[in-house]
Image 1 (cartoon, helix red, strand yellow):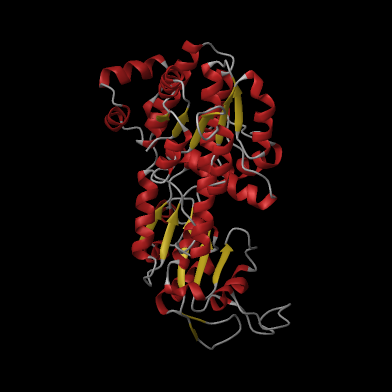
Image 2 (cartoon, rainbow, N blue to C red):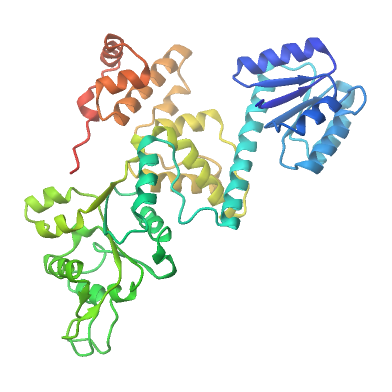
Length: 450
């Protein structure tokens, strides 16, 4: 499929501009007249149409009007002569994306086309999101990404979502544990009942048992009324216990009993209440290690560890950063009733060079700020992309090479063999480049999670 339709009645111009765009990595189909292009548009839709205003038969301006009737979001770039400026201005008012006056530099054309392609892709993604929401084609929140770890995570969620099994989620802060928990709930038969989330680390220790299990009137000083706890409130649905490693030991004992018996007693009551709930627990620490050191009950760990889903940090999802950022741009743009802009190359570089210690949550916040402020801000950690703006070509290539090697080592957990395959490099070449950039593979090994 062609990314661009290029329409001009001069063969030399068609050939020269096709070469220019293809050298920039953009696929092109050329036409000598608007009628031929319209015929092809019935079977193929490009991302961008470029047309000369003066054409034999149907003019470029009239073609624009037809295209805007068929698809107002299709970017159309007009090529104009000096005498056509007033007509080009009118065409812009009629919906043209841009106009380029002859003679023009090749970089002027390629930059305009690249911006138009990105705008079109954002528009198409927005349409897809809206259609999915309207048609309810997907259940649950969207877990976006194409990296292997995310593909496997989605497959696991689909496989276990509608089972009664309790789930343990492991991942760093900001990796989307509550998103996964909600997805599990929405893809299960429990989705018509409550999804109840509680952060165990945010509730004071003296209140957590009352918050979770409820209490009877007069059960303790200050208990002036009966309280229904989170477990009861989640009846028939799903209870999400975030930061479960923060749960006090006494509450852990009661949780273990509930997991085994599926009943609870409110504080101050002797009556057992049957429970029909699914429990999803989440942690950012190695619970097995916590159990071995005595700060988490070992029997509770083994009871929770039936199915564990590992959520990868964003630094191991290099290929997902742009698509995630675009998604959050669309969401934020809709929230603030603003247009989602196309990212200039230097901003893309900045996104890819940042190490994202706050993971997906930090990326989402950066996208929201971008919509509000029109620029990337708040990326406080080491950012090599900004430094490249003042470097010469050789220095920029060297800096980008280092970024790619570090990203590959991260995604391969420090494995030289896997990194060789991912970058398609010989072992000696990879070692030479790591030595040149002073890269230590040990820094990219993640601690094993069991």
